[in-house]
Image (cartoon, rainbow, N blue to C red; front, side, top):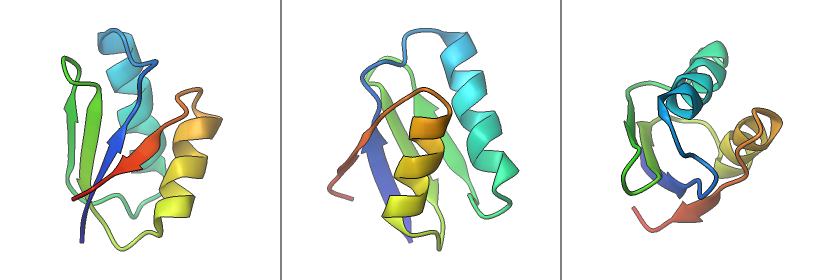
Length: 68
């Protein structure tokens, strides 16, 4: 299932790399698309949104879910 999130604190490629690494570390993130310009993260995953939000928060990038 495709899910979208907005991470307002994401500001550079380093942020993108940290977010991608944190999501990939779960082993369940599936395909990840990160748009630095719009500060959005899209991923095709079976993970619960609450799990994804916790991963992002732990990585230092609190986010909110957006409509898919």
